[in-house]
Length: 491
Image (cartoon, rainbow, N blue to C red):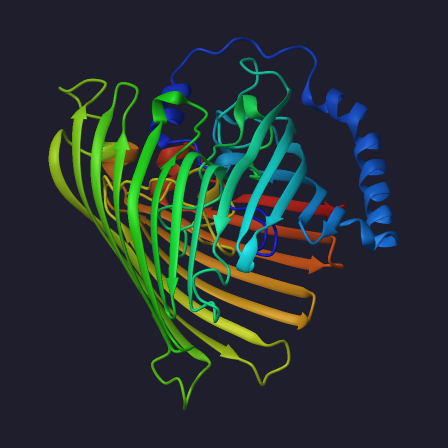
């Protein structure tokens, strides 16, 4: 998953129960035209296109967001972002006997043109709007099992509208000092709550929608968001709808969010969300109470030390299921009402005086069986796609206990190296049809290079060392190795 300075939030992983259903189906014979033959046709074009884009972006740094008009009445601009990634797998899915249904090498591409406008109103207020489209494509089949050989085409692509929103912000209209501001917006737009544990990515990628790992589609649809800022207090009210691949996974979120920031020493947040899973065979309603607290315990003596916590209490009420006699445990647990909890605690220390500006952190996260993972996302590597292998392709944030140790090194101002170590345990292994709760360990090594304002490159190598739980889940016991290269160009 790419770094936080890229426009990649999250992508919803295929559910384990969905994979299990696909895994037991009889699949058609794979087509005669294999991935290797397709790859030979596309490799030269892909390589040439990459270096042409790289050269153009380096040589013409003024192309990022082109302004058509800027004057007393407003501003109109347009831009374009092109993202591409190639990933390779060794011992795919830990050497699972089903790995012949997916590709060991696959390639992704997204193209997103955008148009943004602002109309200046009296006393600093503004009307703002934006529109964007995304073309997304994948050549091959990634390990998520969302698409498979013999079932889906090898090259999958689709154009979809992404952003189309309009809003109004008060500026100095209500307060000349801008200590009291109001913002209203509606349409299809991004929204992230706190660390992204619950709400961050509203649209699914992958399958018939093309690329999966890049995760360029992020918006919630049919939104209405209001924001009020009063000095150090932020108040939000929102209505959001997600945009899943499978319409049976549609959800509606209505809620409020309150945050208080005390200088640079502490931030407290509380949110209430009503989550309505309203379509398909499974229908449920959830009342969510989310508490967040980030602080520096010794802000004056030790400002490099910080602690982040989040606690989520959910009151789940599953109304219908595919089979009420054998309820689907993965979604909301048994029928009826229940209380489920989740959250995390993290401690981080930044060695600002050492070469490389090291940052070392440890996070413990628990999401009980039946925890409603909603539409989670991320703000940096490991949140909340917990692992570039397991978090991207295998797990959602439910029925899972994780330990994350993370080291971040900045050898230069525009290069960041990330080393993440994950240990995974199932809260209830029976949900994943395993007897062992010990899933395994994953190590991710990723380097981000911000070449300039318009070009970002990443490369990574990740490995999953399966324990008994992963071996039972996949039917394989080999060390899974993944390699990744990524590039983003903004014009």
